[in-house]
Amino acid sequence: MNLSLLHNNVEKKWRLDTRRIGDDLLEVSCAGRWCLDQNLPAAEITLAGAGDDLRRLSFNTAQLSAWDTGFLAFLRGLCKLCAERGLSIDQEGLPRGVRHLLAMAAAVPEQKGVRRGNGRQSLVSQVGAATVAFFRGVPEMLHFLGEITVSFGRLLSGRARFRLSDLWWEIEEVGPRAVAIVSVISFLVGLILAYLGADQLRLVGAQIFIADLVAIGMVREVGALMTGIIIAGRTGASFAAQLGTMQVNEEIDAFKTLGISPIDFLVLPRMLALILMVPLLTLYASFVGMLAGMLVSVAIFDIGMFEYYTETLRALEIKHFLVGLAKGSVYGAMVAYAGCLRGMQCGRSAESVGEAATSAVVTGILLITITASLMTIIFYRLGI
Amino acid sequence: MAAAPHIEIRDLTMAYGEFVIQHDLNFVVNKGDIFVVMGGNGCGKTTLMRALIGLQRPARGTVFYSGEDFWNVPPEQQARLKRRLGIMFQGGALWSSLTLAENVALPLKEYTDLPARRIAGIVSFKLALVGLAGFEEFYPAELSGGMKKRAGLARAMALDPDILVIDEPSSGLDPLTARRLDDLILELRDSLGTTIVVITHELASILGIGTNSVFLDSENHTMINTGNPREAVVSGDARVRHFLTRGAA
Image 1 (cartoon, each protein chain N blue to C red):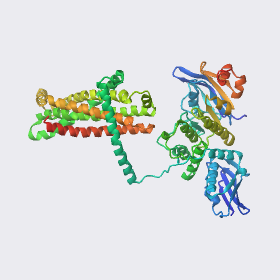
Image 2: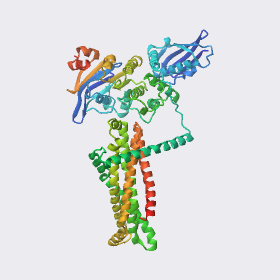
Image 3: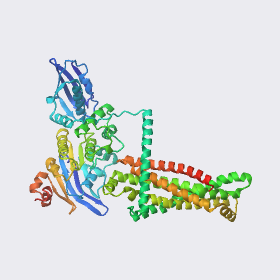
Image 4: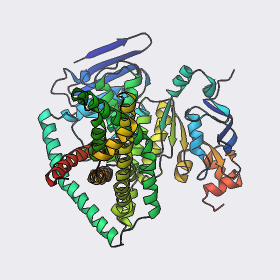
């Protein structure tokens, strides 16, 4: 079998010829430029039509004017094909540099079992894998919860090892620095509640009860819920990113090798900071929301300021505050738990830090929603 | 008229604010050189590399590539000059969301019209050259530091660049792998005519492959020696000899 292929672009000319010599030898001649910027032939073309009696391959590159990785990749493909068909190759006819680079590429053989397929999983497989991953994740979450509980036990018995300066730093970070965003969101939520209530209460001429709606709504439910969600997005993601980056840099491994519990040193201060600060932020958010409700009622719905104030005082009981504070503490704990859990579970790459932060927010908001529902039912049953 | 030097560093001063890292650097890298930038820790080797590859504007002076003033040409011309460079960063700098094959393939997809099948062949060859055959579908997070470094070299070589700039190629590698990498650098120079700038303080590499060099002094914040490092061992500045003989001379 003889073959001649020519790429005849004037600037970028290459030529491939094959010639049978004797019964079992095929001489492959490569001439012209064999470079990356050209449309070089596939290696398979060289052996197309070669009979079963072919045993050896040799090269003639006397007319080869330029080559680069394009030529090397072509030859490597050809070498693989020859290996598959049991053909021997005589590389003497190739330029010295080509022979050396091909030898270098073959010097470290592929490790057994290292190659992976890159095929995409089917939808069913993906759903299955996600389900398995979820159920495998549950024991991990419970284990982490157990570790935190034990760590709190050490804290109560005075044996937990963390720096108080870290706790103060976290408190400042999650509390005072979050006041601005909590103020804006709470004010707007209070305003929305007032408008919503006014629209309905006007129908029965009971607009004064906007004060009751806003006060009880903000103090018992909405203040804590909105604060929890804000903190999940702001602080939960930050916790996951901090701890995730520490995982990437092996800082957490360094704690473990020193015999220092990373839960005590890293998770406990963050948990405490949120459990202490979220109730205070909740209280603050409730007052800001009530202030917004009062402004709307006075400015838009002609309710007297004193009248609104008196109605608010009449509506609120100490139990409403206690319920709000309890929810704030629990939401704070949930956000800290989700943020620290996802941070500690983080992989070793930059991408996994991003995934940890996203997952911390999603898990935090999910946990807040579940506990909010449970607590509402429990408080209702208890008549609080 | 004689051709302009391949790379020319002229009156280069690198600084972070008021703090001058290196000043008044002047040297030439010729085509086909394996040019070693050497010096102790913190002397500014990597900062010099950042000026060479366009990541950090020098406080003064400039870099010429074949006579073109890299820091004072229009952006599109600078982009064209950058495409002549292949860079291997100290830690590999692989994109973590891409597999090794995708990392090496990205420059080929961006700057050539090659079909996917040929790109796959080239990627496989480049990875085999650095001893990573079969690791195409691995993500950087699944590799050791040395493997990331080698994959970074495979990516730097993807487009057969005219100039290869390599930061600390052998640090953290076992001796045999380091030797293989040195052999590969020599072969790239000999076979493809690649000019190679190596930033390193590994003595075996400096003396084994370097054909030309500059020594950056961290005390005086400037260069104190240029030339073949093997000659510098016997006839160079006393501080360079001290460095190259690990304090024996």
